[in-house]
Length: 566
Image (cartoon, rainbow, N blue to C red; front, top):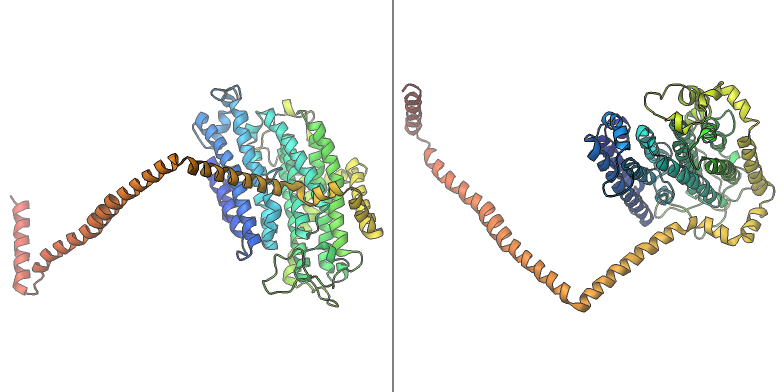
């Protein structure tokens, strides 16, 4: 997986990038299905593989369109010919070719980076081991689509249509997937939907032509989300593989190191000033404020709402797991979530049993990740967001897409964080965290009352908008349609008999000519007869008598002299 990802990010042409792109998908399929004896893991890995193949098929079309007009796969050649491509139309249509090509490329990014509605594979992939979730779904694979769009920024800057579409898709993903995270009870599912929501923020930055802000959030997100996943793994192990946050609570006294590192990750995810996530999210907000693209105003409103939602589900998870009264140690007749337990291993803590203490081999990586999750945003905000660190790799048409350069806001990370303490995003974050504290620490009856008051909305979010059900229905309808066609063929009996006779004739011809005469008669038997005949001749020369060998040597020497001395 690491090899494939390195091939992807180091590629200077579309062929090498596509090789790494597909190899990453294959490796993730194998890692998600690590526990291959579990039907849920097999189903999740297959779903991830198939959805990525569907989006990758459209991605290949985009690569083919670019090659057909530029005659090269190299990025340098594509960028050099981009103005000529911008003036071309797709043959037979009134569509700009560069718009169609970029739409196809972005469709590939939607599948790889889990954008709505192609995100359904990522929550199910939590069936894999928790370190796999931290690797794939926090830092590397899901950000491949974001990286690809930023890498090809000179092409995407030529199509305002695709940029506006990215704003729409990113806004839908950031907000609606955050709403789903507010209702989930599996600790890894909550973090998975949080990842999808943050990928939506990165797509928002791409749509606003703020490619540096997207890559900056990609960098900070890798640290605090990997930290959150690994902290969840420690909690799951301590809870004897029980992943239901309704069965946790009060774990702070049993796992102080995990609590502290999870707090750092949660504050960074929520966008608290001075933490890494604040700097990258504030960069995205500034980019949306300065964007002149159609839809950027609505996307900015959705981004603000998403900040409130992010703070709410982040601290909901944190409070339910580490604070409040202890809810573990109860009999669990049918545990809801236990994908990492063995087939005969009990799940959950028995009455009177306490959470296991975390070994150092698990807590030391948490501490090492907590340091950059806290500090790396303030360290990199200058060169990545306002400096020229990415100037040679990214291109933004500032004359058409940016009202005012973000560099005008560059005043140092400390001053930026101080300014953030009096900004609207900070107050939205405080509101989300405060409501979460009231709901889950002060009056835990309020969430149940709200769910009972809005049962339709609660079921909609709890079932993740029924997207998996819709996909299953579509697949079932396709299967019934295929069965209907076959039944119609059997009813008429005409097409079926023709196809059957043709298949039998082809099979008989391949059998008699291909297998009996060619394979058996010529290749197998013929080669054996040839070797036997040749060895029968050679056998007479190898008689074992010395005068025969002397005669052959003299005869060979005579032939040599006659040929070269004639």
